[in-house]
Image (cartoon, rainbow, N blue to C red; front, side):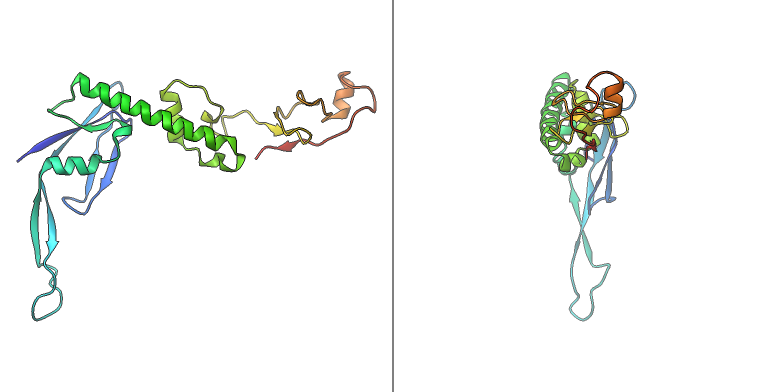
Length: 206
């Protein structure tokens, strides 16, 4: 029986569903300080429905087993996952060159996801589409982005109603356009003369 080894540099296990074999293929991710996880794939079978019999309804047992080679299974279940560092090894374990190529593929995928998140961040209405995978990609590349932090982790901001700049909700005067946001406190700190300047209300961002 042929066997093929799949290596994964991803930090999570991946579950792939197919109609053949056992129906579920679990690709082991790396754990702890490991560089990769290994999954051995073996030959399996698919079943072809032979259809209706000549004299009656469909017979559920009228199937024909079709063998599928391990290499073909491995190619199928890893398709589209190269950007996650999942690949087929030439041997029982990945070579240094294979790991290097997989690492480059991961970085390329991560760069694309960071660019995608940057675009989503530009429009407040699409910021919710930024996922943990986008954030993981940014951290992987060692980049700093405001959107890396979840809403709970992010510093709260509000939008200045005069110039629409995002500012600290504690601000009493907008640092950008100098609009007075809290006259009482602004006068208290001597930032404006008594009764001077328009009063505007801060609006929450998003």
